[in-house]
Length: 145
Ligand SMILES: [Zn+2]
Ligand SMILES: [Zn+2]
Image (cartoon, rainbow, N blue to C red; front, top):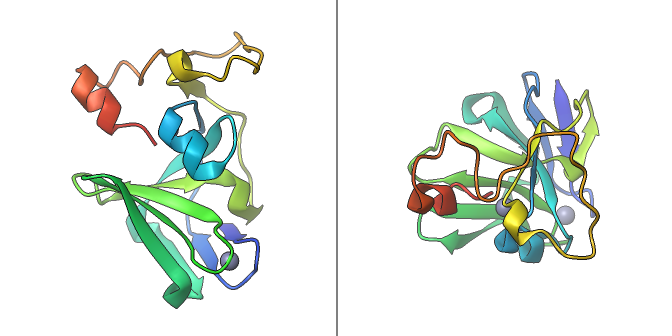
């Protein structure tokens, strides 16, 4: 079981499952959405993810037509992104996790957008755009977190 909350503590969520994939994303959208040089997130099953408190405070912003970013309207903490064409998966922002096990990051994506001042760690797979599973640049763009 994974539990998490936002900075103001009004919104709480639970994920009744195991996190087995952690991505570091360097894309420009994530940087601005999170105010950080990269974001750490994990794909989790939407049906096992639930907002257990404060759902009324959640706000949604569509950073692209098919992808929304959901955050606390009171304090701005980002919780997850979700694609309209992949609604079964939410990409959880791991900085909001307060309880439960998170493994080491699995890989890094959108490395071509990495902030120049951030040193590179070459010990895990790094992809210029998205993982090889994304077949075209168009798909890779829409797959950004
Ligand atoms: Zn909050
Ligand atoms: Zn991203």
